[in-house]
Image 1 (tube, helix red, strand yellow):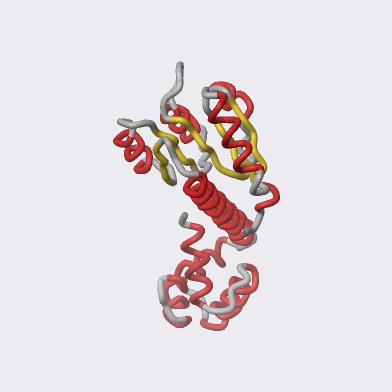
Image 2: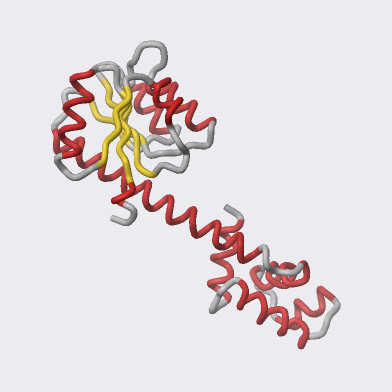
Length: 204
């Protein structure tokens, strides 16, 4: 798994026994773990640059795991989350899935099931971060284009031929070819298909 060595499983649960058992389980499978006794403790300590995932108990005093998840989303922090639920909490957990959580697990749970969900979350996190780095790289390349090159790129991505681009911009086909070559070079695109995919990344 890419970035696995840098990833951390953040466990937020007010139940010491649960925290300790999860720590033992995950660390025995070579995962790095940090424990927090309350959502506020985690909020005070968390850093958006951290890579990994969250394991949150749904029911905690003062602030629920669902409320913590919502506060993190408001801050733009989107770690994959596994919710630990008790009997009767499943409807709340399903609601959490709709707001971005990866999954939930009901107590009592099997070690194998928890390990599977955490590994799934870490994979989701790694993939998201690879995608984010790629988006940043594409944005940096796009920033190198001149205004005219951006116009040419937009029309190429829209499917226009060089002559059509020339007619629309009031320039010669030769000039379009020069701008097109520069766009492909700066954006590191080998084909128009590559350029379309990069354009879609720029659009988010």
